[in-house]
Image 1 (cartoon, rainbow, N blue to C red):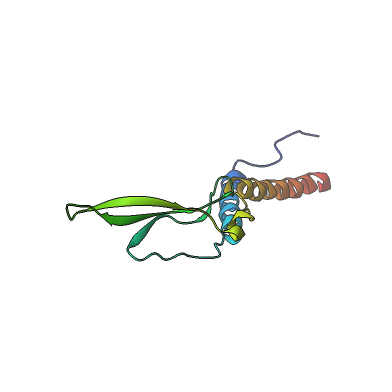
Image 2 (cartoon, rainbow, N blue to C red):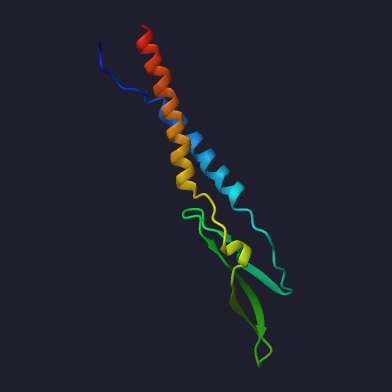
Length: 120
């Protein structure tokens, strides 16, 4: 019996594509924010949500214009702590979803290839 590779090099792009789709899909499904705060005259610099690489929650940062004594404006950044709902949740990190998705493609292709070899 000839020993060979269990998966072909052509399956690696498929595994990467499926891994990316599963990774981002799982992150987006689990990272839905529960609230959007609105501040008049302020621009959100960083919205409250989850870090895609770690899945950990973080608060928001907004930039507001503050008047100076000379009549001008300067931007002032303000950090807003995360809500209690956001602090108790975690999102599935994109790298974990990528590994699971790509691993499933390679596992399924390996099983199919092994069954073909055994049936021959």
